[in-house]
Length: 347
Image (cartoon, rainbow, N blue to C red; front, side, top):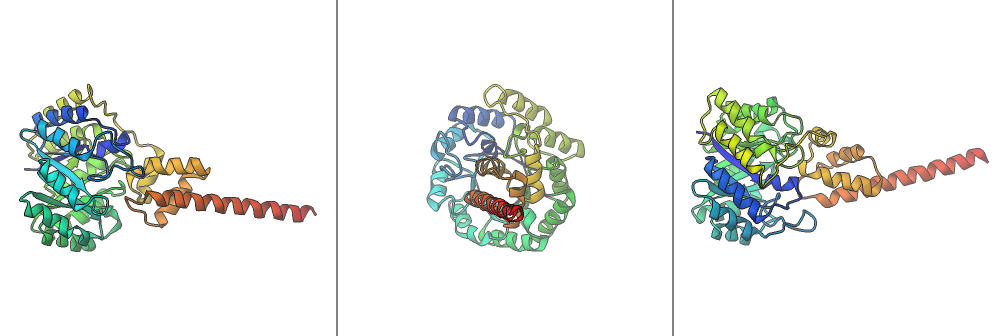
């Protein structure tokens, strides 16, 4: 049986600058529960402790979000995303007290060691802990396996490969998921972004290679170009014979119901989202990059390239402004030199 983890109330929060209300969370969680969704993930787009001036402030705090969703869920498990450094151990304690069932401890794909004490904290509380390797396109299969084994050793009951930038193609997914499935004794999962229009295809390949946990969002509601669309995902799974606790009919009804209170718009793949996918930059960076490019009057796509060379990862929003400033200063210097040379020629 494939585990479906619905990130609509977490990754979808990115799409509207983290402004989901308690009422929206309750209504969607209730509808997702009735639809047979296994895990309903809730919170700020960046997870526990993510609300801030830099990353975007939520209208309600973590406790209210989680308690609201918990009250709506009868059969579905309540999940939460946690990035060490952004969140603290006390945030996990808060989440567990609010009734969270699944804590997904997420690190950059080569920094699994920082997840140790947080995974152990969750397991000591007798709750489910998943390890998540973000920006998984940035490491080859053998490195990802080594990192996943660390998480498995800490007590993680699954490891999720997160294609945070929407960079991956089916061939990349195949090589990485298959290596983890062969090398681990716990479940492997996959979280796709749709920057290159491949979220469903990549998720299907992950399933073919043995992944047992797949993330998705209703109508693809998520950061940047959006996530794997649940309706399409479940339809394809049914056609290919994969079993889940939900059905295409149920998730279709979930999508229809959500329109009345959530109004999730199917994300289109803009040129900016395609660029972030090509350059391997976190999908949630697009509005920050566009803002910085406008503020400093620099070329947006040149800024993507410079940030890619710095191998930017989630949580480094301040570097976007820094790099835009450098690009603007370089432009101004070039212009000044050009004017000086023009004067010397005219003289």
